[in-house]
Length: 135
Image (cartoon, rainbow, N blue to C red):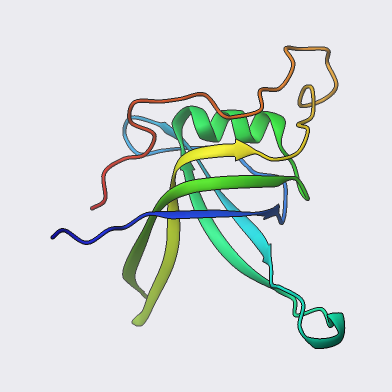
């Protein structure tokens, strides 16, 4: 039986997403950090949040950057990835989520600067291949 690598989370964007164009094909990409509230403990004590990085590609990245901003709640369906590299002799690594689908869980901004553009969708556009294959 093949291992499953599927994750579904929801959380709030910790900052406004920034759109990048990467690689020789200049694919649209953003890395969003989500704050995921931990359940309250005894006597309703606040237990803080977990922070997770999510790589979002192509049309999903473009739509997120256009319509969502810091503090907005989104849902993500995707897979977990892990990278390792070396910088100046120091070994580095990160574990993150690659988004397959992005859901807007709160009313999105109508346009990036209030320019009266098209209304924001409730979900990023569907794509046949939302993220590049894992390396």
